[in-house]
Image (cartoon, rainbow, N blue to C red):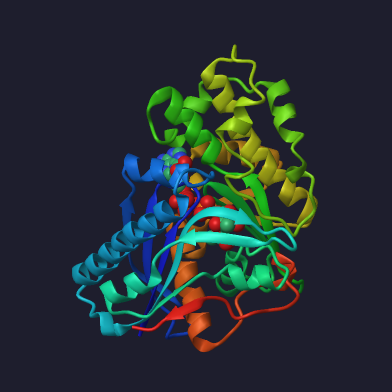
Length: 363
Ligand SMILES: Nc1ncnc2c1ncn2[C@@H]1O[C@H](COP(=O)(O)OP(=O)(O)OP(=O)(O)O)[C@@H](O)[C@H]1O
Ligand SMILES: CC(=O)N[C@H]1[C@@H]2OC[C@@H](O2)[C@@H](O)[C@@H]1O[C@H](C)C(=O)O
């Protein structure tokens, strides 16, 4: 029996679907699919990150549209691989984050998805809304993948750090014999993506080549790092509310060369991740990267340099393709919910305790 994980993350690039088998002591990712968002959908989602006219209706319509795309991705993955829907215990569907506000008292987080519709269209049990329970228990509701990193990647002898570089970047510290910690470091790719799109028309800077053609602007880098999120101790999580194009523009003089700004943004991501590791995982031995940022060679070089040349590899080396860790994680989170097991780590999110996450929509 299998589980499916669906992740559509803060990069707003598209939908990752992974089908996993947890039935043996060695879990496997059986097959995967990716469906990119078109520009119109991406822009509609971006607009919903701020208040605007008739936003409840627009949010509901986008939840429906996303769920149809999720269902299409799942159904075609099953068809292509000759797997019947009855073989899937549940789908863990993250949804599309459009607001994340984990502050005490007014805490909430919104991931768009119509899970009822997804269950109808796939005939499979759907689990969603993984973050709300953790927030209700006083936590950040994010990051949630550290529990999965622990389950899959923890070693009894080597001190590993797992780094996810998606729209936002986050780390998980897997020190043998110690409680797992993890938190969001700051921007991953989202500022680089937005700047690149604005100046080159490309959705992202392939392999960081454009950034590598520029020079870091030290004063801009320093100004960006003044944001209090970077020095805030964990638990902490963030999103597009905090790091967005407007925030970047507030720091620009408008006479910078675009490629120099891109180089600075790449350095911002690399340094934010490196500082997080050096400050909170000082005895680390190995760093493994996942998420789309793993495909940015220039970023990985800067990160490696900032970590004084310590070993930095992709999670591929641990047996999981860097592109699929998050979708795999949501399949695992779905299994935790079905088994009635907690899947937040209170030490990571700051919740009052471990909680069973997710809302279940039965097939
Ligand atoms: N070849 C590449 N070169 C440079 N960057 C890349 C490459 N491939 C992907 N990326 C970057 O990775 C991003 C997608 O990453 P990913 O799929 O991990 O994001 P996500 O799921 O939205 O993230 P999260 O939820 O963790 O914030 C793209 O928007 C792009 O910035
Ligand atoms: C609110 C939200 O959607 N947060 C995402 C985002 O993308 C990366 C980082 O910020 C992480 O905190 C989280 O996603 C992953 C899947 C997590 O919860 O671990």
